[in-house]
Every structure is written in structure tokens, then in C-alpha cells.
Length: 156
Length: 156
Length: 156
Length: 156
Image 1 (cartoon, helix red, strand yellow):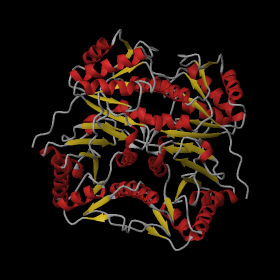
Image 2 (cartoon, each protein chain N blue to C red):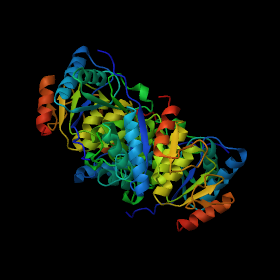
Image 3 (cartoon, helix red, strand yellow):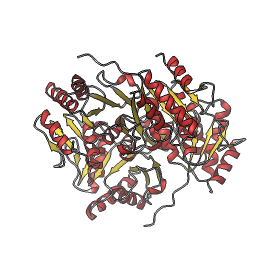
Image 4 (cartoon, each protein chain N blue to C red):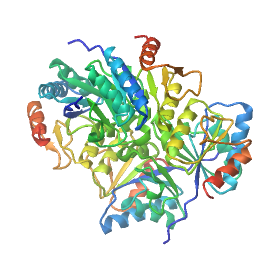
């Protein structure tokens, strides 16, 4: 039996809360990732994470939620596969280690920690209404553009 | 849009090496888990983990590998979705937190640590040619039996 | 300025609860570790961990508590330095990685996971009224003996 | 026997490399923390971490290194107590969870992740020649000032 061709895993990072505009952007980002056949990896909770998963599922995509608690039921209802770390903030590092690139949508300080990890690991970081604290972060104007530029950067 | 019905996640734990007999058992365990429509979660590396994933994929099942390194490419070729923890042995706790029950196949001291975590978290542990250090561990005679009894215990 | 000569770090593992006899053993173990000038590393919570720390402090020893929560105040009052992991059971791996050998005193399934990690990492494991599931674990008859044999094994 | 009065634990964060000026600042920061009787917690490796530990030890202070590898010997020679996490970047979260406030000295993207965690956890963050990406970060002009303002903020 042959091995499988693994799908590209892409991260969407952002907070448990977000303005209506930010949540709408997250949903489009999730949808566009699914359209490209990639797997959406996120923190699995509410807000931006939930909106992105909902978007991905609306296109039949696959969603993985790497959650901070040890209870699988804490994941949002659009997560297919739940990784229950029980590691609080440290789970942010696992998200980054598991993806080929990330799109930050809005987000607060937790998102900033994930951006720091991603930059340290030298994977592409696209910012959509999020932190732009260094020129190593790629700034996107809108959700479609954010996904397009990320896939160019990761060579898919 | 409705939420999705999450599939049951079941763990297969065991070492990077194993006798031919143990690897055969692991492959059957993986196959039987896939037949029941459950998701196979494991450590994603070689030996028992690889054999179990190969078994699951032979039935079109889904496999998740929660690996100890930070390099997605270290997962075996039968893993669908890779969680690259970069946490060494501590990733064993994440495997246990992410499943409803586990089957230990052969295995050495790393497997013992996972059994300890699973018993602490009070999820069912089935032993197939593995540790049976307490009566809280369910002893299985063969691979089919191991999967059957696990699914009874987790109520699926 | 010269570097410092690091002290030997020794682990005491055991549960949050314990019989009067087990707690008494843990206290003696802590005391004897301190007498030898070693640093006591443990999980920092109650039961065996607290008794061992109390024993160490009664001899002016140093105690480090690597706790499962993210709140430094959860450590017992005999811990000098608190490492607040917020990683639940996974902190057990950090304890093992940080010591040259461990003494298990009583203990339940969490202790079993730590023993598994220690055996995997090939550091000496001494059992005092605890798990003896393999001949790689050194069985001690009493608390004084447990500490003596551990220090012989780690070459101090 | 009475419990001990735990010392305040303060973090110094920064990279494995730094300019001569940054390393000098780190050393003064470490020294001033030790003078105030606080415990210095850091990542335990080279560069800023080593300079800060050297400064603390020059005043007889206590230093704790929470290192990314699983090998205690990887800590710099001015670390008193080594916590070997074997968790790579995720150990940054443990540093932040274990301190009452942090001083960032220089630093690159790893430091940014730690600042994100600290801001998320709402502990004081002082920046000395480091990131100032939000007004929640307190900017210090020099090393003495950085330590003074941190201790005011944490109420010591």
C-alpha cells in the first residue's frame, strides 16, 4: 500500500472575540483555504477561530482545532478533529509548528505570541487587520488577497 | 449552517519498534478502528504507530499523528494530519487528552507513560500484548477483540 | 567571574494524597535529599509532594515545584521556586527531564506516567511503596535506603 | 514547621545573541534584580539570558533557567537551577507563567512571543531596547530604570 499525499496545513490565528467585520474576514479566509484543498488549523475556540472553521466547512474543507483545554467538547462546532492539549497559551507553539504558513485575522496579544513564533520559525505570516510590527509580516488588504498571497509564499 | 457531528477519536499507543507479531496486531487494530468510522490518533512515528496508520488507511480511515518533533515531515507516510508538537515525551499527554479511549499494542516505557496518563484521566485502556500493571487495564486476547471491547467501553 | 557549580537535582514523585505512612516516608526522603546538598524537584502540590518539601526545608534544603497550573500560588508552602507550567499532566515530563534520578513514594497513575518517562530517559528510578512493574525499577525497603541507593546510582 | 516566604520571581527575556550594548544592559538588569532580593527567571541559554544570569550571580542572586532542550547541561554556567522542558518555543509560555513581571532586553521574534504571552496574562512588561508595539509595554531608558519601574509595577 502506498503512502498518502498529505494535504497542506495552513493556520488561521486570531482571538476569541472580534468585530463583525473581522469575523466576516475570518469566514472568507476559511472558505478560500478550503477551496484550495488545504487543511485549516486553528486554536479551535470561538471568535475568529470559529468563523474561519465555519467558512471552511461551508466549502467542505477540513478543520483541525488545537485547543488550550483538556476537554474535547470545548472546541467549536465547526472543528472536525480536536487536539486537546490542556496546555493553555503554550498550545500556540503547537499550532505554528503544525502549519506551512499563517494568516492572522484581527487578534490581540495571544495572536501576537503566535506571530512571534511563526516569524521565529520563518514561515510566512500574512496580516489581515492584525499586527504589522515588522516588515517580515505580509500585509493583506482583504480576505481573498490574504489567502492568495499566502499560497504563493508557501509555493502551493 | 449546522455544526458537524464530530467523529469519535480513538488512540493507538505503542513503540517505534515492535516484533512482526506486534506490528501485525497494530495493523489489524488500525483497520478495525477505521471500519467503525472512528478517527485513529497516535504518536505518528514508526513501528506500532506506522502499522496502525497503514491498517486504518487500508480501510479508508482517517489518521492523526501527534509527533514529538517540530518537523511535520517526520510523521510516517500513513498519517493524514500531522500535529508537530516539538515537545518530546510530553506529547504523550496530548494524545491521551485528545481521545475517548486507547489501545496499547506492545510498547515499552513511553507506552507505560501514556497508560499512566489514560488511567489518571479515567478513559478506557485496552492492553494487547502490552502492560497489564493494574486491573483497571482491560486485557485483550487479539486485535479484533481489543477494538470490540474498547468501543463497548466508550459507548460507541 | 566563574560559573557556578550546579547542585544535583533529584526528583520526588507521588500523589496529591497518601496514607500517613507514605507521607512520613516522603518527609524523610525530602530530609535526606537536603542533607546530601541536592535540590529537590517535585510537582509542587500537596500530599507526597508537600511532605517531601517540608522534609527538605526542615534541613535547610532547596525545593522546586513544577506545578500543573498557571498560578504560582497553587504551589505548597514549602516550595522555594515555583515553575507554573499550566500544562496539566504534561508537566510530569518536565520534572523528569530536569532531574538526575527520581524516588517514587506511593503514588497512583500520575506517578506511573512519571516512572514511564524516567525509564524511557534511562535515569535511575527508586520505588518506595510505589510501582515495581519492571526490574529496571530499584525497590527500596525504607526512606533512608531509597535516598542512599539513588545517590549511589547517580554517582554522587 | 512554618512555610517559607517565597521570593518574587522576575523574568528577563531576550535572544541568544545581542550587541555588546544589549548584553551590557542585560547584565545590569540581572544585577539589579539580585540586589532587590528577587529571583531571576529566564530561558537559561546564551546571549541576553547568560548576561543577565552573570549579572545576578555577581550580586549573589538566584537564577533559574527554563531551557528549550531536554538536556540540563545546555543551560549557561550562571544558572543555579535548570528546568529542562524539551519543549522548544513552547517553553516561553512557562517562563511567563512563572514570573510576576518581565523585562525584555533587545531580542528578536522569540522575545516577541514572550511579550505577547505576558501581555495576554496581564503582567507588567518593560522594554529595554526591545519591542514597543503597544502602549501596554512600558518603555525604559536604561537598565537601572527598567528594573526600578518593574518593581514599582509589581508592588515590591
